[in-house]
Length: 62
Image (cartoon, rainbow, N blue to C red; front, top):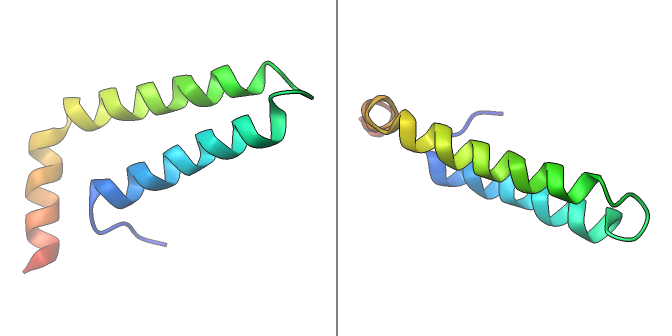
């Protein structure tokens, strides 16, 4: 239940997005755009906190 790096975390967020599209495109059309926004927010926050995440990931590798 822990992520060792941001790529693994982002992978799971993108999986949520893909699942939202796969299971909701026809039935619940409001859901996929929210999942798209989630990925955009994730990318924004990962970029905004890149330096802090670099330090954290480096500490995990040791």
